[in-house]
Image (cartoon, rainbow, N blue to C red; front, side, top):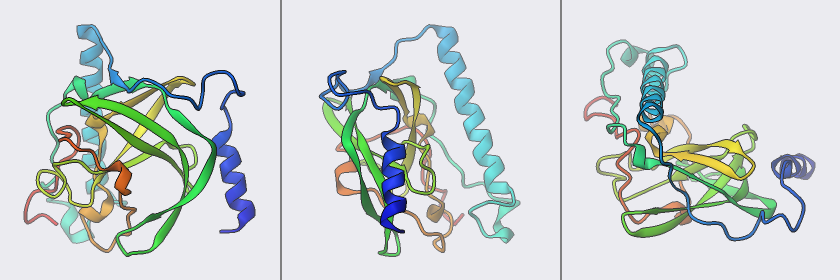
Length: 217
């Protein structure tokens, strides 16, 4: 990729950031679960169920990560039960300016991303920070590749991915219930970025997608 293309992506990543002095780029409180009424929680659960259904359709469809001969009868897709405590809301600490970085993939090569900032969270008595990226191929996304203490046991050893949803310029949703496996969890011929060392969480995130059932990949 040319320097011009990377510069254009960095400019796009910075778009929407406010001017110096508005508090963006400085310390922010870690994200925390959002309090909600029973109907709102039920709506979140319904969205999670729709997420599960979308993944089931993806696995069975023509763009499945699975080889074609394994798609029709695949039953290895597994999720933790929905848990609203893993739906966190908070602000980002923006990196000013964003910068182009390389993430190593499962083939030992590098993929260019834009490092945009980081998001803090508190869970199980620990405070941790996750670096947030804007992928070169999908600059509209807020992308977090991560590992936690379930990785390699209950969840895929190569880590999982999750995306932030922007509520407004100061509020983002980090919903681990929607954490998902990279395609290489289902077929090792895929090329997938690996979580960087700073995105290894020191606790178990028992939310989102689990490792494929044994014997199914």
